[in-house]
Length: 435
Image (cartoon, rainbow, N blue to C red; front, side, top):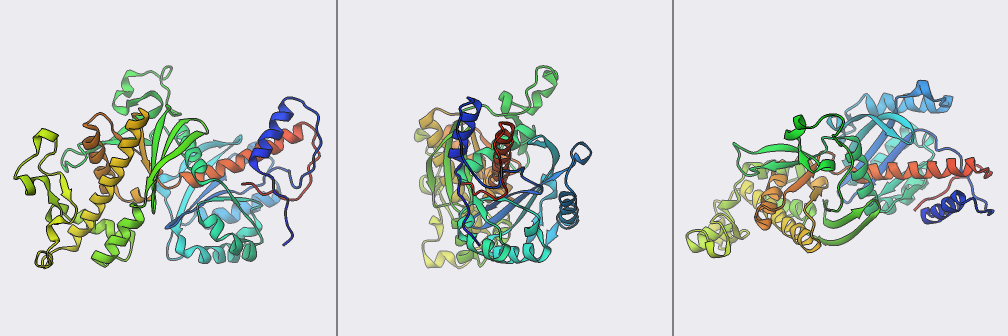
């Protein structure tokens, strides 16, 4: 495959600014025509790969080419009419978003995931179904966008356009929040099995959904975000970011003790074969059987420094002696691993929020997928560390924001192309590579 011209997005932004200022300049580039359907976003993480597909539904309003129509029919027949692909691919139908507006087109967002260890099988599937011939561009993020770039080019004849991982994450969060009013929620009484409840949080207007009746359609702002906020992204590892505005963010902290650590501990201690198995074990366990609590040490709460009796003082502290391990249950060990991870992450996120004077803290990432018990422990940890002054916020589409951000990046390219054409720039037919 011949070398292709590389044009960075930073360069394109400068070009756009010059065009807007009507400054005369001359340049040449390849394939700056419209981005044809289909549109995909791909996030290849350390454990899980996420794919977002935009299915246009406004065909009557746009003159799609015959090729694009046939591509759409082929993809819909396979992707949309199925909920599972092979042994491990899953379409999360409950996350589907309808009537989404992207780049002037209206359509549906579909959310699909599979283990990253199956990436080579995915590439073979794409090849066998002929999907690689349908998409002119695929924007990808995550470490796998680099790791599997050669296989994608060699097997499919297409290039994975690498998008910045954290930029894609924030872009995806903000796009979904603007298009789905019920995206954000928090837990009341997170560890009370009888009274725990999820409450929708209207992020744009800083209120909970229980006050909806007090607002009329005229004065309700149901989309968008309030700045600043903290994002704690929990995947195999943990990254903590402070977001001050659109495209204004920085990574300020993180931890290696995340989802990868949790699954590794469960694999070693509980012989768990999958993340789902580990979560099921943890749901049935009680960490108090293996963790040493403040009450175990002092006989009661340590009130002078604000430590309740059931606060974990030492993870796995009750099984340090071999005789203590004889009757240990794998369920309790899994729950202890989960609580350890949640408490550690909650402490880090709270300290970042406190340092930067921020009240809104959103937890996202695939560690929270099918894992409400972890979210509830994070909520409890945040209540504990902040003494009730801050709430942990969670998002419905956890884990998919990087892929959505990649889809948004493709839209940026399309907008640049349209602006260039409108200024009379002669565009040819060779693809560009974005970074």
